[in-house]
Amino acid sequence: MPLFPSPRDLPGCTLLAFPREIDLLNAEFLFLGTMDVVDARRGRLRRLVLDLTGTDFMDSQGVRVISDVRGRLPRSSELRVAARPDGAAVRVLELTGLRRDVPVYDCLAEAVAA
Image (cartoon, rainbow, N blue to C red):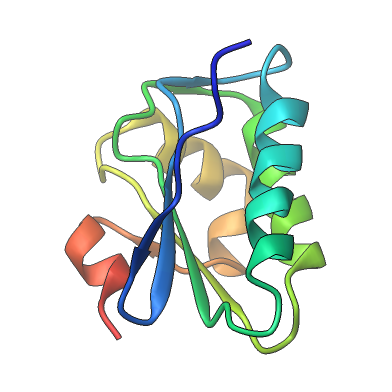
């Protein structure tokens, strides 16, 4: 299994770049790694941005990861997703309805902005 992406701490948020593919093989790894980042920043995590702009393939397991992270975030934290408007991740988030519950931005800069 590849190393979990290093989180980037930016003013007001933590950014995690997700891999090119999110599926059954890496979903649990991504969820656990993301929760390790959240737990390490507990009490000071205001916004978590998941960067899916480089994700070319995502199935329902990716939706599950995002939904489960959202459900486990502290109430004081906000989850945002950045994904290419023409990408697979956006299509899957729209088809499953998760986009209604999690803000999805077409541009990474907008997702990390305060």
